[in-house]
Image (cartoon, rainbow, N blue to C red):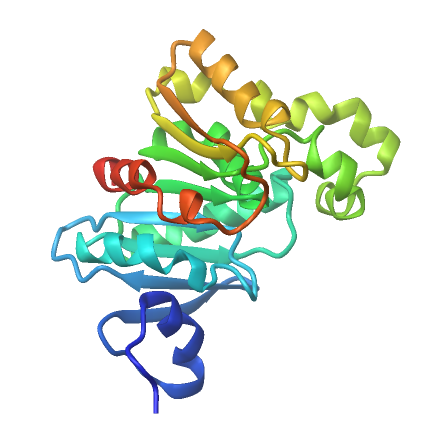
Length: 254
C-alpha cells in the first residue's frame, strides 16, 4: 500500500502503479524524448509553469518535493523533458525548443520560469540566451553555466558528443557556444535571475560559474540575485532545495 505521495513520488510511481492521488501527471514524448508535466490544475488560459532540467531517469528526485509542493499549491505546473546528457549544443537547444512548443500547444504559458540544477543550468541557460523573449525568469541550484568549467574539466567526452566536434574544434569555437558570453539578450529582455550556490562547491565552482554570471549580468544592467551558501558543496541540502528565496522567486515570476 502506498503512503501519502508528494508530486515527485507520484512522478516516480505513476508508471508502475497508475496512481494519480492529489496531482495529475501527464507523460508524453516529443520526438525521441520522454517528457512530463505535473499539472498545477490551473484554470488560466495560459497555465503558469516551471521548466526544470536536467530531466533524466533519476532527476528530478524526491529531494525536490518541498518546493514542487509549494508550486503546485499555487497552481503552477512543473515540467521537463529528457534530452539525455546534453551540454547546450545547437542541436540539443533545438530539441528543447520542440518541447517548449509542445507545452505552449498544450495551453501552458509562452513564458515559463526556467530552473536548472547542476548540469541542468547549462541546458536551461543555453536555451534562454537563444530565446530571451520566451523566458519569464531563470533560476539555478548550483548550476553549471560556463562551458570552460565542469564540461571541459570533468565531462569532456559527453560535451564533445553533444556538440559533435573533436576537442580541437570545440576549443576553437567554445566562445561561440558558451552561454556566459551571450547574456546581453536576456538583460535587454529584462529577464530576472536568481541563483543559490555553495562557496565550497568543488564540482561546479562558484567563481567559475555563478559569480561570473552575476558580475557580467550586472554590467549589462540585468537584475540578478546570487544567494551564496557558506560551507556548502555540490550536495543535497535544505539550504538549496528548501530555499525560501528560491521558492518565492519561482512563484513571483511564474
